[in-house]
Amino acid sequence: MTALRMLWYLLWIAPHVLQVMIVNLMYRRGLYKRFPAFFVYTIFEILQVGVLLAASQVKRGLYPTLYADGLAISTAIRFWVIYELYIYFFRHYPSLSISARTLFRATTVALLLLAVGLAIFAPSVGPDGPLRVAYTLDRTVSILQGGLLIVLFLFSKYFALSWRTHGFGIALGLGIFACVELATSAVWLQLGTMESHRILINVMGQAVYLGCVFIWLFYLARPETVPAADAKALPPQDLEIWNRELERLLHP
Amino acid sequence: MTITIILIVVSFAALGFLFRLAKGHGSASELLDNPSQHLRPVDIEAFRNLIDPEEREFLRKNLSPVEFRVVQRQRLLAAAEYIGGAAHNAALLLRMGEAARHSSDPATAEAAEKLIRNAFRLRLYAFQARAGIYVCTLMPGVQISPVRVAERYEQMTRQVVMLGCLQYPTRGVPAAM
Image 1: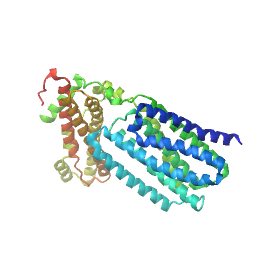
Image 2 (image 1 turned 90 degrees about the vertical axis):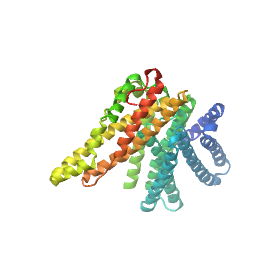
Image 3 (image 1 turned 60 degrees about the horizontal axis):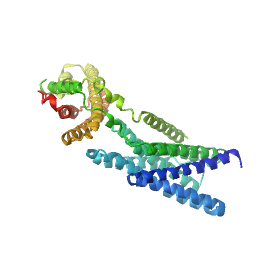
Image 4 (image 1 turned 30 degrees about the vertical axis):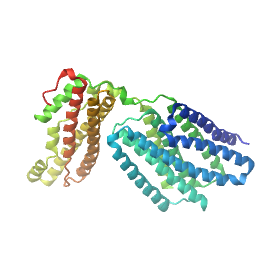
């Protein structure tokens, strides 16, 4: 077993060990009630790696089917997590809840059109057959998931809306993961499965996932805070400035 | 190959954006410690004048087409500056409103909620108006009327003063109200 392959195994197992800690933390703090989709996603990831490890030892022929099925379910749950993040973020702004639904639908449609357009007009030059379909699907999903999260972050930044710690951490980890997935799926489609770079890209992907799990653990372990809630009341001098502004508007 | 390169560049740009966000998360209090230092002056009357269709028609009739295009472009860019200032103040007030929303006094919390709603709408209109203005600077013949920005700014100002009165009841109601 080469050093690179050993590293790959280590990076494959380590995130899931940390995810056990995340499940424990979420259960103890009752965070599973606030983020049920993320809780289900984390448990599924742990179970999936257990099943895949067992399959790789007992019946290797079963491994690709189990891996593909697991990937499809995991991808679907990640969409649920993203929807949950939209709902969670806008729940703190009741007057903007209509904007949340509109934003989610409009962004999904726009990104779907973009991703499908890319799949049709920019096919791969790398692998053929089912592998090409799988990588194209992977790229489509990455565009959708990464795009949805980036749009949510851009929206919150432009409108100066603040994130709660836990929601921010989950979205940040998932966003980083989706961005790296987009880059790697684009590379896969271009280069195919040449052995020389296959393990290297896999190792990089696993290392990024480990980083994302660290981010989730870090933010979920912190107490929930609202950055803007630290603000003091409107200072009296500001009140006077605004009053002068109002007077000027009313009596120009 | 081009699409692959574009997607990789986009992914890295998105990653950079996410890391910047993570670095800045929770540092909003710097802005809120002394908001008056961050407020930008906005002369709504001057802004109304810049977007006034009658003023525009007057200039069109009295200037040569080339002069009109130059002047109109400068007027539109000045209007965009005002809108930028109003949008900046709205962002600041959004944060102030968010802090006041957690008040135990229901009247203050309600006033803060209204302030958030108006500041949010102002930023939305400002986004649309600025996009429209930049299009118009390329085509000075096209007419836009970002009057909703001025209206929303007035409403927002009233609500800030109202919120301030609720937070400092001993200071009394200002003459402007």
